[in-house]
Length: 249
Image (cartoon, rainbow, N blue to C red; front, side, top):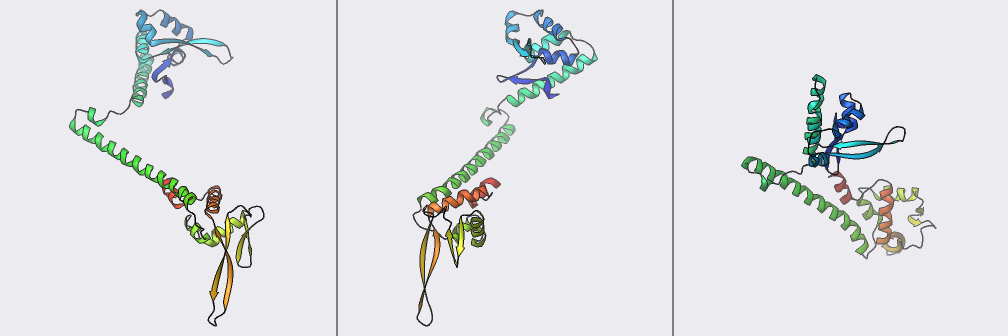
């Protein structure tokens, strides 16, 4: 029966249309009862507010918003077992909704020492949880900051670790995205992404036991490229390790 009452401008109210429907009365009769109430003008103005609404046929009609005090005054003359039943339901709903709107009392405002201690414990838990989540958000932001501030290049293996993946798996994702292709033993960017400053080619010199030297080319990613990969991975549902902590929190 939570439809019996609702909130309007932070006040818990019902309206004359709902009252009429609930108590099995004509809406015109309920509005007449409100207008004929033997109460002061101040009480009427404070607890009954006339508003317009459109009925099912789009016609402009009037109804009254009614506070809990106004409701109690209005239905005082409604008698019978059915009326008594709905009066109780309304009272329960008014009290339930008002309790939801009331802010929790701070611990220092509670006189009972046991209740005050329990509230203080709850407050400390909320503070600790807020601090924990703030730290995780800061760590998440720091992840991108570290990318932007770091000047050095990084291998695909190091980037893959951010997402708990192997270099093989990350290379395959980038290949499937049409970002890179493999030529011999080196991964190269496709024409669409080449020249954007995402990668660099480095030469590694390997000395053989017979004294000969072999030069091998391999690709490393710049921090700009690392940030580019970060955006690609988010599209695939992957998050960096620090972000994963936040999602699991």
